Length: 325
Image 1 (cartoon, rainbow, N blue to C red):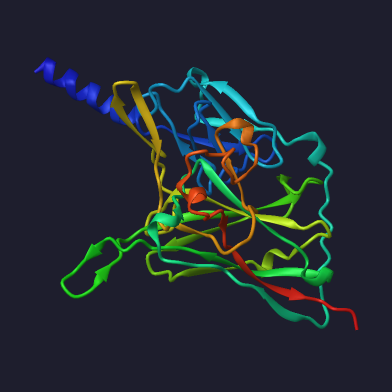
Image 2: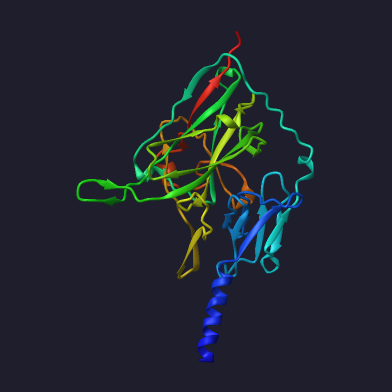
């Protein structure tokens, strides 16, 4: 009887340990920091949810020794996994404490203009989204006139995989993405997260070939030098739209030891061969100091997308363009 009680006690202890929730909060306000980035220093990581909560334990992540917690406007926090507490505090960066965003609302007569999105339905010419990758596309002012981004148009591929006797059926999914905006460096690269607001959104199997993301309320006025819009996966969600706190990579054993593969998420992102030149930037969020790289063979010399000429993500947009009278 004692043996059974010991086994049950150990089992319950493991379950509790495997479900440790950690919350990332602002050092001053004590409010949770939504979707903070949690890097494990080994090329993998996860995101906190909308309340700043993520799941971590040594049972769930046996080989993780260090954590690096970051979010825009805050100093990065680095700590040993052995020193993790239930609440982690981030301090605001000093150079951001007095920052004031001056973003005048564009008003008056305007015209609607579009940048056409580019779609296709070839599974093999798609980017497989993972939480470790981020894709950025540049937008410039329309004819150099004051321009506001009203809607982003995101090409997607739902990947029909289940078939009934008479028709194809799409597997159900609910994936949370985030759109983030970046300033443009003098050499034309995404340089840093701008102070423009970001936005999270959820794509399900009910979407079509293009997901239209209305961002008019963000009041994104394109600067003279342009702006980058990026999308990144945060993870799958519950039916209520809450981010699922789950491991973002899979492990398998091979003759070379334990290998880790980042979990891929639906929908897929069609890359196109209809844009001249390489104009899409990508980065690995948990590697290479989060540096942006042009999507070319220097990023991945074995990329099948690049070999087939599918070098760019065909993100489109609808603008409000304000012309002088």
